[in-house]
Length: 559
Image 1: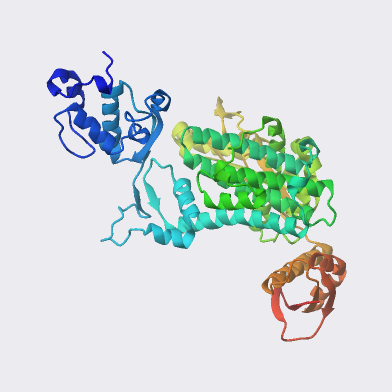
Image 2: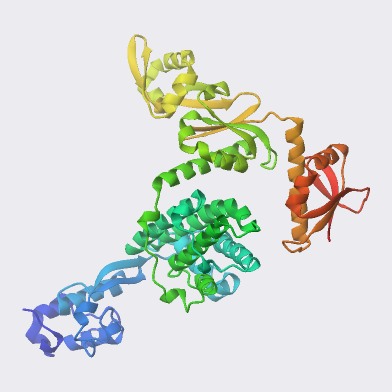
């Protein structure tokens, strides 16, 4: 029979079945009750969720059905018996149902070595000291980002520093960059709007990424997976927004005229900064509040509507194309590092598999700029620039083939590795003959080695190849000196705290090789550094810089 609180008699003996279910033991205060009412009062007095939060049954009787059960409860793992169990027991007794729909269990917090924090061990953390050093946002974000809340978290202060630098520092830099140019240009992006279909592909790409991000964060929050939400935001802000979109768009902000392209980059960056502020506000409230209020002038991000994904702005094919280019660029930069050639040093050619030509050929200017190469070649026969070798994977193939493993090794030596290696890497199976018997071989049987031929360097990942021509001409070397020269000048401008638009004079004392390179690229250097003149002087007081192995004295003066 269904019974309300009012129906339950204070006399314990009249309702023995109900009493036996909860054992009249108050797990919250540890006391033993002799009357049902005492148990219930104890729970209400101790804040039992979700009854006491609505002051039920003393208030909210008329709408309690809408408030009960609670959407979720969150406590530490040590409360499994003392809180979660007790609540479900009393709720079952009183309401005949669970008091909450979801349970979020917080794991323990230990030090970076996995030891329980203790004052006696000296490994306890003063949370207020952490707030003072890094701010509440960074500490909150770290706790969510480093591991799911339901697992034991190893607290490492270096991780908080990392989050502060790589996430909050990056987001602040994007906001500061945007605000700097908007204020310099006296632009308010709310005053104009470039239709989405009229915006450049780079804008449409980042908007597609952003709207997919909204859906992913929303889905993570729906299942209370705050770690996944934080990590999605972390990756988007660092990799998509800052390291690709803003970096690729810098010259658009520098344009002197307010063109449609410049309007588009202002619109897009503004929209995404507002959206990211809303997405991260439930996880780290303070920086989003500052950015949102500064950009919108509205009361608070915390009373704004949570973003909704606009599926009309999601273009997965566009993301596929751009992500392929980003992968190729990353691999190309890795190839440069292998042979220790800086990105500032121009190269003549980069070779990419011809099967991607239709997909990304129109993005070749972007690849050229990112990899600092003069020409992108879509090559149908990459074997002209790389060598393949095939050897048995003895760990896998040895136990399967036994004594035949030596014969298998000889068979592999006789194969044209340039033909078979790519097939195996692509997941295909090839048939070989071992002493008259056919053997189906997949990539698990072999170790494939790929090396670039002399004068080239290459990187391969997941059957994706990129090859750089590392042969240098005098023109390429001179341009490399000029780009290195520009980099040093820009750093000196920054060290001298010059304003962005300050004009300068450049003085240098270098050998003839450097002097010839500076002369050949004089106009380019002056344009990039806002220099009114470049003068070669003999002066031992100049600051010595290393320009690709050439010690060169340099000085800048504000005009």
